[in-house]
Image (cartoon, rainbow, N blue to C red; front, side, top):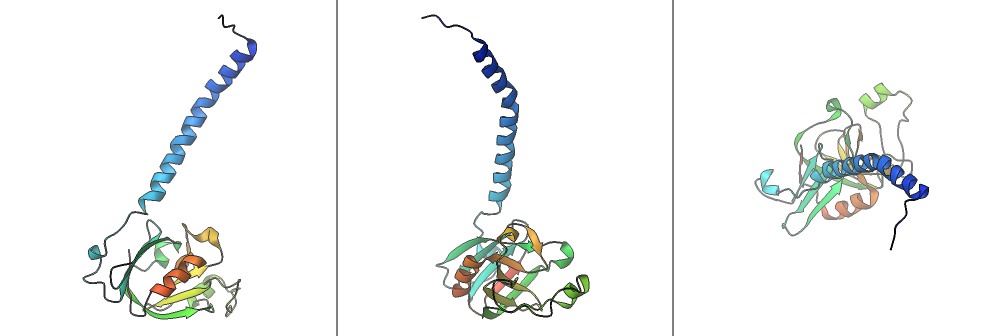
Length: 187
C-alpha cells in the first residue's frame, strides 16, 4: 500500500507543529496551578498546633486559604476552602476561640471599614445581601468571624477585611459541628 503526501496533510501537520508549544505551555501552566492549589489541601495534624482537642480545634491557614476542623473526640476531620484577609494589615494571626454562634447574622461594618468606605450602610440585616452569609461564628478577637458568603467568587482568594469566609453550605456544616469554646488558630 502506497501513501501519498497531500497538500491537506502537509497543512494539517504544519498547524499541529505550530500549536504544539502553546498546548504544551498550557498544560505546564495548568499543572502548576493545580500543584499550587492542591498544596494547601494537605491534611494537617492538630497536635502540631494544640496540646489537646478540648471541645474541638480549627486551624485557618491564610497562605493556603484552607480551614481545618477536628471534633473534640477526634473522630471528625473536615477541610474547607476559604477566603482570607486581603492584606497583612487586616490579618490577625495567633490563638483565639469561638465565643458565639449566630444563624442568620446581621452585618455591621467595623469602624475601620467605615473609615475606608464611608458609603457602607450602618447595618445589613440577614438575607442574600448580607456579606456574612447564612452563619457566623464569633472569635474572641473583636470584629473577627468565621462566616459564610453569598459571593462565591471570594472563596480561594485574599478578599476579606479580616474574617475567614466559607461557602454558605460549608459554613452551615461547620456551624453544626463547632461548639462555643472551640479553640482556633490562624496561621
